Image (cartoon, rainbow, N blue to C red; front, top):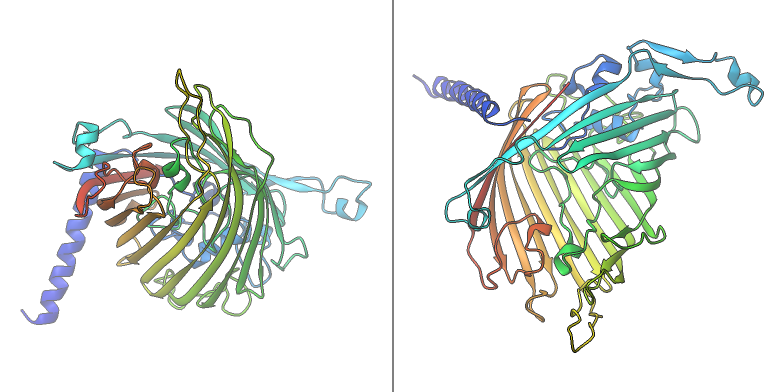
Amino acid sequence: MDFHSSMHSWRRLSIYATTLAAGLLVTLVLPPKAAAIPSFARKYETACTTCHTVYPMLNSFGEAFRRNGYRFPSQNGSRDSDATLAASIPMGQSEYIKQFPDAVWPDKIMKEVPLSVWVNGGVAVNLPKSDAAQAAGNTFTWNNILSEMHLFGAGAFDDRVTYFTQITLANDGLDLETAYLLWNDVFGQDRHELNLWVGRLMAPSITSFGGHSSYLSDTGTPAVSLSGLFNPNGTFVLGQGHADGVEANGVVAHRVGWSVGWLASMPSAGLKVPNAEDLYAHVGVKLGGMSLDGEGPGGAMVANAKRPWEETALTLDVFGYHGVNVLDNGTGSAPVAQRSAIDAVGGGLRLNVASLIVNAGVQLEQHSHPYAGTAATATAPGMPDGRSGHGYTQFNELDYVVFPWLVPGVRTELTHLGESSSQPGSAAQLLRVMPGIAFLVRQNIKVVVVGDLELAKNLPPVGGWDAAGGVSVPTNTKSTFVAEQINVNAAWAF
């Protein structure tokens, strides 16, 4: 057997082995969160892979669809009525537009309710002799094998007004996670310079990409709460969470994206909600590949129709954020409010070279009064802690699309605190290395297997290190990598 025949045989064997592993894993787990929903597949009568590789990761066309307010890009402008294939019911006649304001502006609704269902779950395998196994007291944690069910509804009222909703049923009850209206192309039908999105947003737009832009993690940017590491009552996570507010965004000259937002600020449990003081701004530019809005020069055409995820492009982003987190300062038996202002800056890049994808970013945060104080005793009052705190998170992810249904990769996340709450004057940090693989069993069934290796030093004891996503137990001087877990997650939707 010559060299080329041998390589071909090995390639076929690897495909069969991966497919067999996928089938075995699906028998072990029920279907992490995602942003792709079959409502759009029904509306446009198209496959999930039109916008995704292994969902929720969007390809360039899918990102343009999202930026355009969930409307297909086209050289004629993102007119929703040009791309929708499912039947709709007109709410008034087009002639009403000429009669406005003496007539109500017309719109439409889908003939069939554009709903879809999503189920999430997974199993964490705590490796022997790891901190994760000691903390959990077991190897297999089954309580999240069925963790959430989402009900989505999304669509358009006309060519410029669209909507997105998400209701989640979990073990702790029912929650309206997302519900917002999108008024797109405020300046005109085929321009994207200004859009207004109002309601409970999916997440603040501090990058050019959707919040779930990772093959191996639930979110593209780290779901790390530095506030929670300073103070166990802290809940603020930069760039994460479903936030009430309003965002203006747009794409200028097809290649420069921007966003400005105003959001509700966040209190700890038992404390009053403060005035809405969270503000952010972001700008990004894409060089090469498909344009940000999928229109104009370098629009929705792809170099290889058989491999639509491929392009050669570099996207650069910068952002700034100012907010307020009202914490319990820990000085009394009942919560006592302590305002902690948050100022943050950061940036990121995405490099696409054919099927190779590199993502990297950094987020630097300054918190004015994040620490819990000294609790009151029978003989002394509680004393608040007036120190400020700072830290940063840095992430990298390298992925390679072997096939449209098979993507191996590795992700790293570094969380660094300028001062450990347990070791004043000493920095604390956690490095996580997460090798994994994501693959589709069917277009609407996926499985992700990710390992978790951790290197920790001077971990703060308050709240554990779970606010940074890790499971290492504080030992102050730990300096060796520990393989903590293997996480097997799956999702299915209809």
